[in-house]
Image: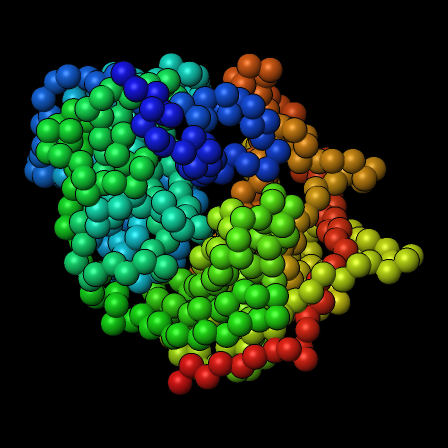
Length: 493
């Protein structure tokens, strides 16, 4: 048996990757969630080999669990990650399955263009994964497969930011998941191979079997995995063709260097989204403070089209090497292949002036649209919906806004009115690509000191929330100014 260091796997990279995957699952539990529940196992790797032969089936077993793109998102637990219309248009149904020890992994669907590859898969069990509402018990994760994806011989999402995911238990026997991998910084041919590798709870075990392909997967050496190694885990694959989406995609080389040193490399417009690709050059070995400062600069710009419309840049995170080199992609809305010009406006941090107050506005819910006006932008709330254990706030942004907005739910006394309270509630912001709008979803998620869910009671019923929640508050100091004197306009036509 080998441990992580023997395998020359970077534990910090695995920790970051596992953390990102875990908190993409089961409702994006990342805002108020007490992360210690799962973090204790983040650096661990694989499970023991379950030494039985695999059974592959494209039909009928695979076809029985295939669900269309639309069907996946019909479950109320799912979240929108890309335009559903475009996903359905460019979706390829696969339906290939492998069964081992009573658990089946099925590659359901793949949808790809020059920006993203979406992979949908299902894990089913002959016996229940859980009983009652106990979906998050450790024994559930002990049986549930950890799944990694290879795209054209490389670990999907290994070198890119702006990867996303979603998953849920459709029932006690069925776990459904989708992953959205950013490929805009790679050269992926129109015809490529998608591979799924499953290991029983690989992320939470302390050692990998010698013949486990996860030894190579987590070193980004998917192409070196042998057929014999593939036979020791759950393995399915499919050939995918993205040429249909390519005819509706366009890449523009930009090559503009801003004063901060960041290089706006190119822009990619495609059916599944638009991304601006930003690069920084190596500058020698940097200490942590220098790296943090440089990393804060990689998204210090705003985008406008030929009509002066501010294009919403999504906060999708970024990464940087210790020498200052980086390659990141930032997704933006309100543009498409017909956009004629991009104006890149650097932004700079503006120290709040003495006496400058935090912008705070409170508005009673019930009448919409509700507009919060700021210096360079407006946040317009178009609806608020209340359900048992959940509040949904629909809104759009007009103008330039760096990060946010983030709303607080209050009662008439100015007290927190989120279902479950500040530490018992998660916030997930859904992007609606068809309308360039957003929904902030506040969901009850109270847990005890051991991380087990505390069952909801009448205090978070829709009636109780409606009786308590009366006011939306938006607070922010806009510390970023647009530097129009250094703006650069790029002709895309």
